[in-house]
Length: 165
Image (cartoon, rainbow, N blue to C red; front, side, top):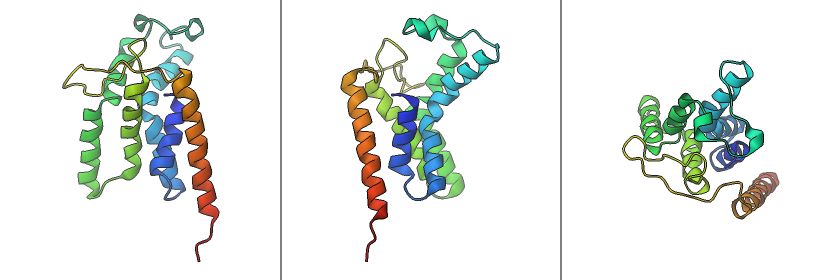
């Protein structure tokens, strides 16, 4: 799924309590992609690495530096997420719910990434098993995602305005 949708879903699902929770949920929703492709983009802009040519369609995996693959596998693993969520829970003595947007990101990516480009290694490092999903850019995924996001935010925002006696 695209990075903005991940943030919007994270905010909608786990950030409705207040603005700070929304912002944190949005950030956790985009974090897995930011810590892989975001770092690549910044490094490419700074001239530290040669980025792939996105204008030519889906780049070859060989055109993506190895560190991106490593970071992607780490940030898109449910095992990593569960371990870090648990550590934060133990330290805080209560769960930090905005962090669940990270887990949601992974769960949404599993069926919306294909073997063509970065399938989701959700069981890494325990298993290399991945699903060959339907790309999030395919109309059957893309348009329902946009429609459901709009509907979800409309329901949330209109519900916030109603005064309960």
